Image (cartoon, rainbow, N blue to C red; front, side, top):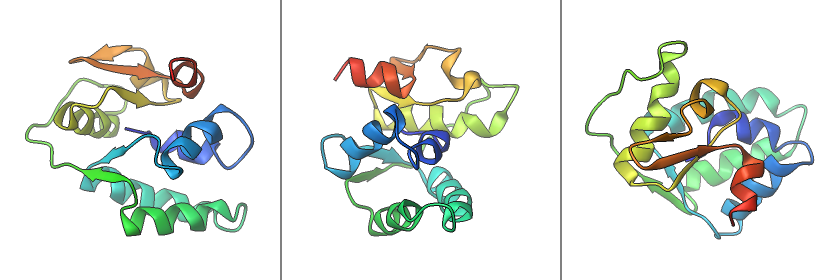
Length: 128
């Protein structure tokens, strides 16, 4: 599961871009729920004028390229500071994902949740 913040950071050079490239090249599978996809499709178009890669990401999301869609069977109320971030936990647990890659401290402070490791893009890349 990749948090929206990582996709936004991937528009510039760095570890987030490298992590997203692994998904684009089919080396990792992106697990997504409808709620997450809706957030991607709402937030990422705001960057179209700044970065041509925003359009490429939107096309990949719409084509569901290398994406595993899941429907979480239960909702979580784990992250009180930003309840909207719970959707990433719900998706990851339902998909039995190994990782949530995030730049968000509300998620990363958990470190691990129900067997899912919550890491920065840099930590994720070190483990690949």
